[in-house]
Image (cartoon, rainbow, N blue to C red; front, side):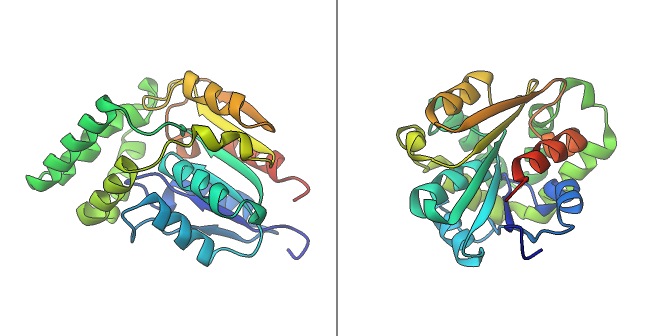
Length: 234
């Protein structure tokens, strides 16, 4: 373990460390693996600062969805501490009007006492169409939502809605960067991935056919293989 760098994992909104469970199980032997806490802060900057405070001096960093926003902020704040970067199902721009309107709709649901409806509305966007009848996967999403709870979810929404545009700082990311995207992702697009690929000098893109936004749970073996190769030698 002393010869390998630790790995820090950053979760998306409404998700818990359970979204990384297959990767933690596969990658922990011989390597310290930590999952960042994104439950206490209402800004991406705060989440990044908390991650850096808890992380080892130098580490590999993988961010999924909102965790990718945190990863971009970590790279702006402390690039010397990150040896390699993986970005799963994320995007670099700030929200546009359509995204902001959707998030405001989620906030209204929570304020109306309908927090459970948030997960139900998001499930079709989170998984590939062929997996929408997978009740075990849907139940896992619902359970992570319940564990997150409405107060934490609202903090995460405020953080996401106020995040900065990361596109101007992509070129400053100088570490090997793996981009992983499910071809049936209902939230991020291929254009978003191509934007990161074009902006980060040492980036490569891996696409997962038949996979949606939750690649870590939908295609765990493929994601584990990609991350294992990315971590090789670190």
